[in-house]
Structures are given as C-alpha cells and as structure tokens.
Image (cartoon, chains in turn brown, blue):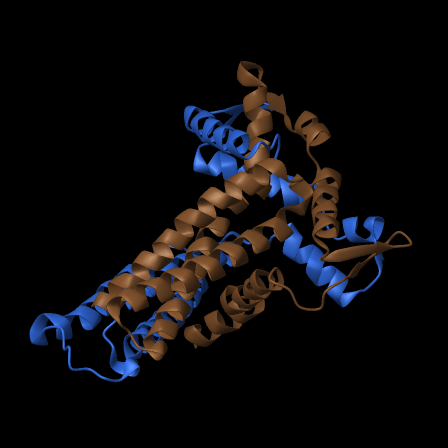
Amino acid sequence: MTVDILIVTISGIASILFFIFHILVFRKMKKEAVFTGLIYVYLFVGIFACLLLSTGFSFLQNYSLVTDMMIAILSFFLYTMTVFVYILYIFGVLESSIRMRLLHHIADTGSKGVRLEDLKKLYNVDIIISKRLLRFSASGELILVGGRYQRNKRYSFIMLPALLEVLMMKLYTVSPKQSLSQGKRSKR
Amino acid sequence: MIYLAISFFLFGCTAFFHVLLHRVLTNHGMKTFWTTTVFLFGFLFTFWLLFAPLALFGDNNRISSWIFIPLPLTASLSYILLSTIYIVFFASPYAGISSPSFKILALVDRYPKLTKKEILRHFSDGELVDKRLHDLVRLGSVYKQGERYFVSLQGKKIDRVVDWYRELLRWNAGG
C-alpha cells in the first residue's frame, strides 16, 4: 500500500504544481500561444516533479530501481490524466468555449437583452474561426504560406483529442438509415 | 500492475456496454445522458474488486515482483479519471456538436493548403452560434422573451466565475 499511496501523492503534488505554474506562466504570455504554453508547462512540471519526487521518496524508503521507475511512470500517468481532465472540464471551457462567450455577450447587455441578429454582429462564424486559426498558427500547428493554411506537424498532442472525437462520433452516431432498417427488422 | 490491468479491462468493458446501451436506446427514441451512470456502477464494482483482496487477506508484504504490487488506489483513481475523460468525449456525439478546432485540423488534413475563405465555407452561424445558444436556453443559463435573449440568475453566476478565472490568467476574452 505504501507504493500505492506514494504514486497518488506524487501525482497530486505534480498536479497542484501544474495548476500554480500554468497561472504564473499564462499571466505573462501571449494568449495565442496557449497550446504551446500548456504543453511546455505540463512536460516541465510532470517530468521534474514525478522524477525527482519518486527518486527522493524511493531513496528514503530504500526501494529498488525498478520500483522507483514504476512509481515515476505511474505517477506521471496519473498526473497526465488529471491535467487532461482539468483542460477538458475547466481550462478548455473557460478559454475557448463558444457557449461561454455567447453567455458573456448576453450578460453584458443586462436587462435590455439582445436580439439574435445583434448577437451575431458581435460574435459570429468569422470571429470564431479566425481566433482558432490564429491560435493554431501561433502554436505552430498550422502555417500560413501564400494565404493558404497547411499542417506544420504531422503528429502532435492536439491530434489526440481530435482523433478521440472522431472515434466517439463513429461509435455513438446512429445514422437514420441504420435506425430505420433496425426498426423495420423489429416490426417483422 | 495487475491492479491497473484489471481497472483498464473493467473500464473497457463498461465503455463497450455504454456504446451498446446508447445505440439501443437511441434506436428506440430514448436518447439520454443518464446512460453515463453505468460508469458509476462500473467504478463501484472495480473498487470492490480491487479492495476486497486487501480487506480479506491484508497487505501482503512478501510480494517480491513489481507486477503484483497492490495498487488499488492508483487503479481506482485511473478508472475515475478515464471515465471522466470518456464522458467529455461522449458529450460531442450526444449533443451532435463537434469542436470547430478539431474540424479545422481535420479539414486541413484532408484538403491541404486551404485559404481562410475555403475553411469558412465548411462552417455556419447556425452550426456554431444558433445550436449553442439553443443549448444555453435548454440548460437555463439564458432565456428568450419575444425576440430578445436575457441572461438568467444561474447564467450570471457562471459568467462571474468565468470572469474571475480570466482575470486570474489576465485574459480579457475567450471563445
């Protein structure tokens, strides 16, 4: 159980450090470079905290090198998932959520309220896509050559959630055709 | 490590069951987000399975191989985190809304060298604004009176939290 508690403790400390560091770093950096900033803070804090803390604790507890490695890898794994949950549930929602931006614009109008056409003058497809293209360019995901966007990196951290979303869409989307044929079968 | 393997296996089984359950219910016109509670039951079973041997036989200190080191806490936490991540990704197909960021990457992957105009052609206000505004109304953060949209008390509270967080990061606007 000691090893188990150690893994959870180290990943917890690393996650708290990530939260503190990302606030400190983001207060100083350009908003457009958000992806790069997140990845650097995640890697820097994760590798240092998990490696140093696991080595330190293993030394104090007289653990073997294999156990030390296992503690470091598993605490890094837990830390990675905790950071991912934070990005998906809090950071992503607050930083890039269209719903939050719409809510902010409506809240700004107070008791006067806003008509859909006026809301779309403040926030529309052009603004939403331009912001994302700017962010992708700043983080190096896309490059702009002669007015045309192209991928800069074939594989990157950002592609993982993108691929997951595609997979989930395929797994969960029931096409009307399929639904209809199954309905007919059940009638027979 | 065997504990983690058990946790991953049970998570995989729960996810598989969830896909089947969602598809069956959707086919019968009973689409609901409550299907995600299967992950809670999956977790309770995993937790019991991981902690039961320890409760029955105690912590075996004679275990020499790293493969059999008991890691019930790590394995349970992994199950919770994996389920939490999974539920976020399930929300996209459930709501029928995909992320515009991922769609841009997929577009540039499929058709390299696109201009901004060509990218914009794949999006619409209806998809990006109207659908999400409808969601806000459905969730009670915003309400509609006549032609105008107003923020509700709940929406105001959410907006204040978001503002506080943006101030913490010194960012003026999101979205």
